[in-house]
Amino acid sequence: ELLRIDHVGIAVPDLDEAIRFYAENLGLRCVHQETNDEQGVREAMLAVGDGTGPKLQLLAPLRPDSAIAKFLGRSGPGLQQLAYTVADVEKASDALRAKGLRLLYDTPRRGTAGSRINFVHPKDAGGVLVELVEPA
Ligand code: CMX
Image (cartoon, rainbow, N blue to C red; front, side, top):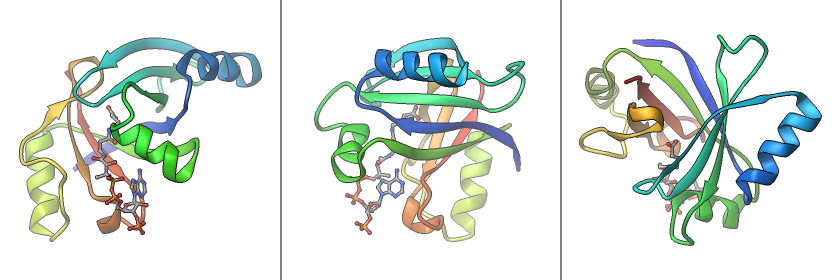
């Protein structure tokens, strides 16, 4: 069901500052930026090496009541999620529900670059917020 690791998401207070930090210190290139109003984030995708592997996603809060703002308030900046690529997010979600895991959404929502996404609750995944990504 899971095809590969799509990206690792890191919560940051300031997106532009974080993009600069990763460029200057680790040489990562920003290859995509967008605002996702529904998710309450400004986000950036950073390529590692030749860019064919998993990406690093930087997530900054748009609003104080957003998931990322809550995460930053509780845990501070750091790893927030691990995302897997799937071919069919509804199928993958159903398969995990059938195993008794709680999915956050009844139906997929819009993720980065028109992808369709859902999440496994971190309490049902060993303390890791797991995202399922069906690319556009
Ligand atoms: N990773 C691991 N554990 C997490 C977590 C995370 N990212 N977020 C919350 N938790 C833990 C909390 O620490 C808490 O643990 P304790 O009960 O032991 O204290 C528990 O989960 C429940 O916390 P909560 O306060 O009830 O839940 P929140 O209101 O913080 O919501 C979650 C948590 C996962 C439901 C919420 O963050 C969410 O809806 N996430 C999905 C959407 C999202 O993350 N969007 C931003 C990214 C957008 C994108 O990727 O495109």
